[in-house]
Length: 87
Image 1: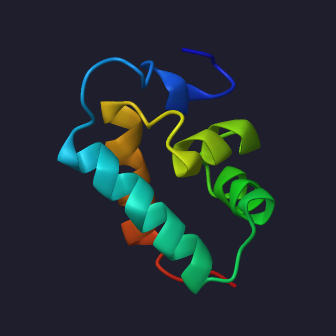
Image 2: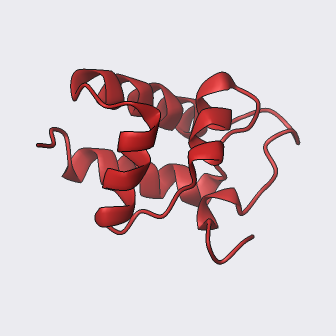
């Protein structure tokens, strides 16, 4: 786990993703589209609201190359609930 990007606390290629991990990524994509945000704008906004994730990580999550670790998935779901719409 990197201090700069705690979202990568576990490698995503290992084992099957949990329902929570799949749901977190699905809702992230939905949230981004609903708010009209690019991936880069999403990362900047998430950083500003104390959810540090890198652009590379977000891209890999959305492409399915990686998935958020279980803790990151829970944190992401909480972030999305707390910030359903942004301006």
